[in-house]
Length: 152
Image 1: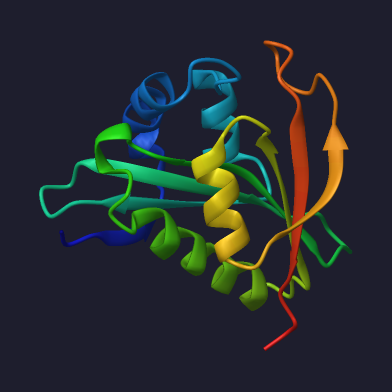
Image 2: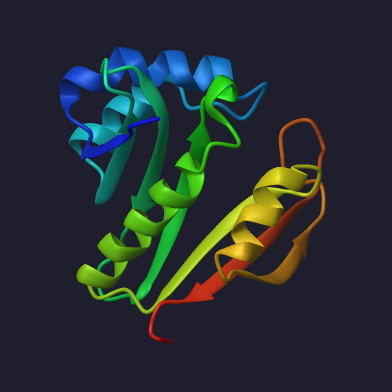
């Protein structure tokens, strides 16, 4: 499958909202939150699309001024496109963007019961940092993970 990665634009709002509804059972971004991330936040949103322009995934990086720690704020792949390497490709490109902007560490939070995401993050070099009890809205715990962006 051919996948194209590109930076999100304001016109992608509807597709992002639909992907949130499909990919997540809870802890979804609202339309208003996504609009803010697209238009006002110090964020970078990268999209993965197929040849027909269908949204297959997204990743959102948040940058804080005067900090070398970048946060992977949201990351998802459409359920029908999982297992095809899209997550690896998207995450690799997000890491490159974080480095390009001076990031030295990339951090994230992930549901403790999301085995596929945990496995992907570990394969991509992230390590477990801290257990987050009752972190998600449904009471599920999470893991805080981090990766150095300065190591070869």
